[in-house]
Length: 338
Image (cartoon, rainbow, N blue to C red):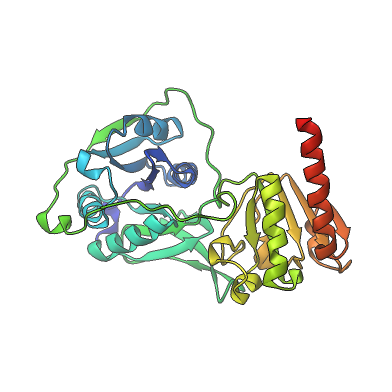
C-alpha cells in the first residue's frame, strides 16, 4: 500500500431519531484538531433520509466537507447497506484516519468496514493524538481490565480506524452558517444487502436518564452492601431526575446492568453534579468522570480516595444518609410546589 495516497480525516456522523448524536459532534471537535495537525481537511460521512439540516450542523461544528448519502432506503440503519456505501467511498477517496463513536451502531459498523477494506481498528479509545513525522494516529485505550492504558498504532494499513467512547472528547462551539461543502455521494444498494429488514422498533425501559447526557448522576459502589441497598441509589436518582451510575464491582456482583458502569472500562460521563455513594474512588472509576462542576461524596471511611477528588463530602453510612437526603429533597420539592 502506498500510504502517501491516503490523506484526510473522516468521522462517521450517527443519527438517532433524525438528529445527530452528541458523540458525532464530539468526533467533529477531535477530528478537526487531528486534521489541523496533519494539515488536511476534515470530512464527515452522513447517511440517512432528509439529512440537509444535520449536514449543515456538521459544517457549523467544523467539518470542511460532509459526504452525504440521502435516500428513503437509508432512513432505517442497515449495517450491510451502510457498509457497502461507506467502504466504496473509502476505497475511492482514501482517508488516512476514520473515526466512529463507540456506540452500539459504531461498534457494529466500524469493524465490518475495517474487514471489508483490509485495515486495522482500535476499539473504545479514550484518547487520540498524532505522530506528525510518521502521520500515525496514536490510539489510547484501557487494557487489562482498565489497569493499564495502551497506545496503539496502525502502521501498515490505511485508513487508521478507531471507535471513540462517547463523552471522552469535547465538541467545538458551533458557528452559524459555517463554511463547508456538502458532497452528495452515489448510492448503490445491492440486492443481497436487502436481506435485513427492520420490522419494528422496540424501546427497552432504562433506569434513570441517559448517562451520556445526564446533568446529574447518582452513582453507587461496593459500599452499598447489597443489591437491595442499591435501590437507594435508584430512588435518589429518581428524586433528582438524574442518571444511575455504578462501579465495575457493582456490575460484576449483578446489582445493576453493565450499561450503568462508569470508568475506564465503562462509560465516560460529563455531568454537572456527580454524587458518589459508597465508592472508594479508585483511579479506573474516577477516570470516567470528565470535568464535573461538582462531586459530592458519601462514604463511612474518612480515608477513602474519593474525598481527595470530591468538592464536598460526608463521612457517614450511605444506607443511613441516602434516606435522609431523599426525605429532605422531597420536602423541598413539596415546598416549592406549595
